[in-house]
Length: 169
Image 1: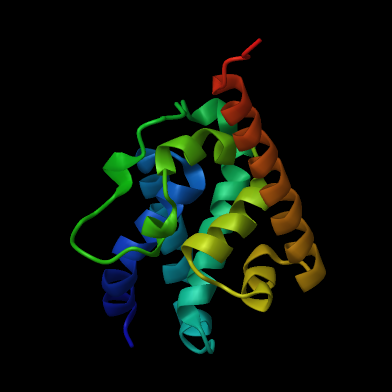
Image 2: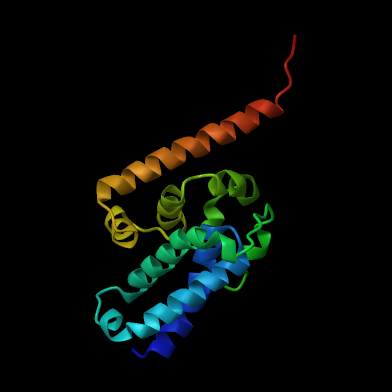
């Protein structure tokens, strides 16, 4: 497979993945563009890999994890309106999330590694070994990131539900 064909096939899902990961569609496009440049440079090695699409996600995650180190180069605004990330042209596994708007804020407050692990698990439907390969860590670390991230999400969402209840005397 040629790089152009691979990138054409992967681009829509990569941008959706990065948008969920970053919480910002414009930043997602930048991260994916940088990832495609890196992938093009190492295409021979990447094309020989068993799962080039998984390797591509690793490049995107690494780009996301490093963009904060370059914070002075970018102006990032968290958005509460994630509806613009939804593309009705293809089925999306993220529709399983009942209320994405309610989840966007708490997800943005997780650590980058926890957020990446959760997005890879529940948005990309990846298993522990695949996530470990993308994040460059052990499978146990992946399970720890997911467990701690889910606990933080549950706590924050439960806190929000409790704040909405009125006290009856």
